[in-house]
Length: 284
Length: 284
Image (cartoon, rainbow over all chains, first blue to last red; front, side):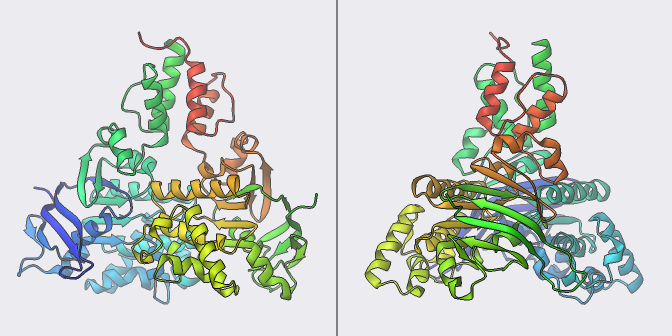
């Protein structure tokens, strides 16, 4: 049974007003335990609207969201507990830090869930560890640490709730390349260890191609593709038509292939490309 | 000929305390009229601090900066400098002031006391330049990130500046928005002869510049043409910058002993270089 399932999910902003807008339309998804899902789509394609429905922040205009087979908006369902189980890291989450110390900020979620002080403390330390936040920072004010550290503290606050599903909306936006790579490797290591579901929105095709095991492509509020990265990025023309791109390396390989060179058609990372080109250059 | 912007041995620190560190130390840069300069560096390298010096938002702690011969430290010339050198920031939502596109673009010339007829002319012209004329009556909050950034750029153009400084203008945009903004920047430089200073940590964007300055720890680590800078792979890595995938690929193949040039900047150059390498290896 999928952990998350959506059935004919649609959402309309400002229903019945002059600015009424259909943001997502008829979305049917099944996400299984242990998956790492990447979501791509141009601005306004419905990415944020979709994920805000997955943890019950927005109520669907029609259709259903099932969590462990149960409709989260059913009368008997406890929507507050869904928000603990489906943790959400918004864009620029560091603007939401508010406590006196980094420790208290990360502990806010676990304590709100009703955990004991001791248990919450353990959660804070584990979460800080996952995101590579130095323990010595925990007693500092969240407003006197660096931007990258703030971002990590904010993500740790959601990880500390130990969610079954962790959703991150562009977690690396604004970070420099090294900071980006480091944070992504920490998220993938976390996912590997925790074996929960991670759903990540990104504008970087390179990152999505490298780290997700399925990619959801949204266009104008509808699912354009939902498949393995190799299958999604094989559809170059369709992606460019909807304002997306191939990872640069995939695009180079495609150009070479179109010129008649014997390049395998599933190359998505620089490492794969190095091997393929090297082999071809040496052996032909 | 004298430089348009002359940065003469400047230092800068945010805090005047004895123990505070220099954020910028002993920088000397000359920027020519009509030049396209890219300043790259990781978070905290001092590049945004430097950007704010070009239009007197910040004043150096030591040394001087001259814009068109005017010392930025002279209080009475502040407004003249800001009219000549416009600044575009990272977050499009922080720099839109009006609810209708053309009103937003008119804000700066209105403030400068430009006669209404002339404002109309400048606004239309500026909107055509950034390819947003068709949206002149639209509400600003409904625009995409890339469109908002172009409106912000139009607002600056309407002041008829000599120079535009853009501080990570694409950090929050999707791939399409990023391309739109970059295309606009290049057009301003090429066709309108406006001096452009682009601050970015995307090496992919720096390739369009005439000259790249690489910042590290508040100092200039390297400056030169894109081809010169991209050839210094080790230094770029030391300065925590990542190379475009095409450059990474060529360098890795070179490291494996294949004979290749070391300064590949973009996809097409990469494809051309690989074609030469693989000559005669097409499948029949």
